[in-house]
Image (cartoon, rainbow, N blue to C red; front, side, top):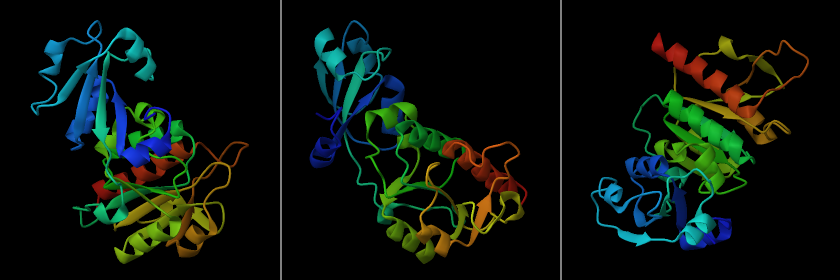
Length: 248
């Protein structure tokens, strides 16, 4: 089932989108919708006419079917069956000659991935790359936690080796958030083509990243613990880069 099985989503190249806001963002992100499903007591057929100008297969569903398909109790009674994009590195379109990219290696929790995507959208980064993904990005929990920002960002996935090669081939500096051989993050220059790379809170980044980094960077901790939530750390680093670029 598309809602629950990553294998099914990958083999069918389809996924479910739930909610009017998320569906509108998917359309804005040039995703192709194949079918709209609506529960008329929550979402009227009249509203469907204002959602998209393209002719779509529209199916009215019962309360029982809606409750089975819906992931959230508060959705407006609207779902869409959409065609997945491949999300491969060679299809990224870096229109900005001085790109700012957020890279996350092996994030597992949908909530963290969603928060990273929201941060990327807020900063209007040029791309988000997930290295060694542990789940597909069309997981309904990621769509929900990102409030649709999985559709508003340019997103790609690949192995750590593939992502490092991609960044080097495009002459993009690699700044890795790490404890080892690091300098304070605000001492570096992010005004040139830059990738900010973050790892998991549990294990950090793999050695491959540390070997190929332009510089390892660290956010100085003033409390007892030596790390923070990955999406919070990414936000601090990305917005420092944005701050520098405003005054460059």
